Amino acid sequence: MVTLELFNLMKSRVKLKVLTCDGADPKFLDALNSMGIETYRVPCRTLLGYPILARGQARKLVEWADVVWTTDVEYSVAPRIKRVKNVPVVAHIHSYALVCPWWGAMYGLREVCVARCSAWRIVGCKQGINMELARVGLLDGVRAGAYWLLDFGKGPLDYFRWKRIVDTSVDSVDVFIAVSNATRDIVVSHLPEARDRVEVVYNPAAHRPWRYVSSLPERRGNYIFYAGGANLNKGPHILLRAFKLLREWGIDVELVMTGTAGTWVEALARRYGVGQGVGFLEKLPEGEYFRLMAGAGATVLPSVWPEPLPTVAVESVSLGVPVVGSGLGGIPEIVDKYGAVAPPLPEKIAEAVVKVLEMRYDREEMRLYAHKKFGVENVERLVEIFNKVAGSRG
Image (cartoon, rainbow, N blue to C red; front, top):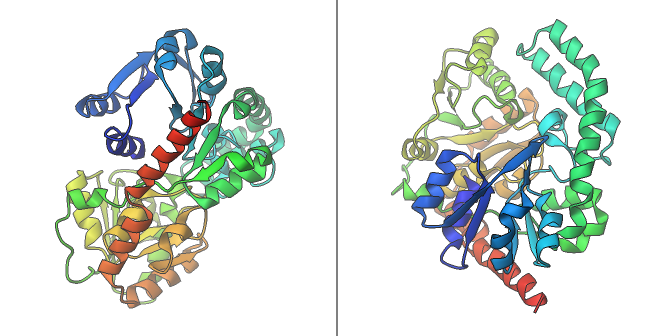
């Protein structure tokens, strides 16, 4: 969604052509077509979830380009591009796939490879997620133990396959675009040689809710809003336990969780004894989704990993709804004074929710803050970077 938003905002500012894998999501391709963007599909294979494009098929498009922009994990394309034409490559960083093979390890849920990535660190990350799955009942103990043992072999294999992708790519990228200062700091800690090539440009996400919300309710509603679906990284299990504490403390508030109906999250709520008072919803149409968000007392993001820059938090602040988030990754850069951050622990999240619900916020001030920091000016910044690297090649 973020990539499509960027394409939509940039198409009037630069001449944009898109090269994508022939197995790309049809909805993504339809969206590009509806924007009138020229799209070329080429054969790809994947390795650990990283797309490896067929260089020969892309030759004509690369020869046309003044700048090649990769939108997240297509790092392997950089050296291939350079062999076709010495064109600047700008690589967007929306995740930590550049410093850790996240597709297999999911960062062990609680951290990125904050120490230098290694084969044994990946073993620990993979084992960490299996144990977390077992703790919330998504994996039985026997299978968790079996996977734990298998990870001693799978972890090093994933690590060395990942190294082959990334090690040949970093030197071929002219500029990296990190979506938050936290993301930049993590990347630079791993790749100090890239320090002078990393720029920070926030995603321009603040405007999107206002396509669907014409005005804000006069008062914030008596419910808290969660939009992470059944993704364990987003901490729904943390939030359910926090909600149980709120009930025990006598706090009269409801919880609405989108994208969770019929999933393990709903089953876990029953195990915790908090099925009543929680609205488990399917994934909603955008208009309904943003109107529901706009009426909430707070949006809660108890993520258990350092999210680079969660769009839902930007959208919430843009709608004048304070955010309770874990103090990890880019979340504090969004929340600022418009909510609270806390460790992703049930009691700490519950305490932060109580604090935020009791506070009054100037919703118009929040909207202006979000639009200034996460508005379309960031697209202009991207274009400036593209023009600068293109001009440097003269």
